[in-house]
Image (cartoon, rainbow, N blue to C red; front, side, top):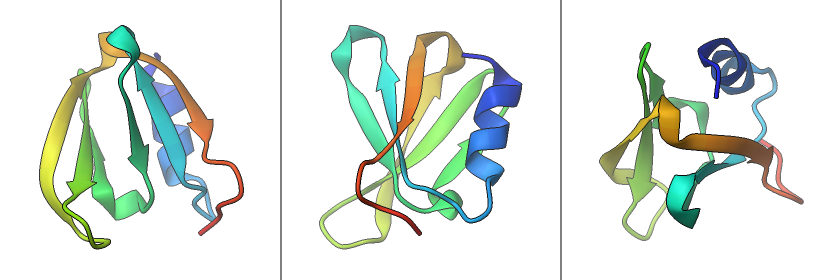
Amino acid sequence: MRLDELRETLRRTPFQPVRVHLTGGRSLDIRHPEFSGLTRHSLFIGVPAGDDAPDRMVQCDLLHVVSIAPIDGESS
């Protein structure tokens, strides 16, 4: 996925939670814009332990991001 497309999605106001689909079938949710980070080659996603706050970050190479879609029925 292209860096500028990801940047635009993550900076959208108001933010809409999204699901990131990766090669291999894995998907991760970004429910708050501050739970994500973007570099030229990687997307970092905060993964919550059980409550709303993330307890770890997952690094995804942009080459493995297949698509990003809104999480149905949710808005922020």
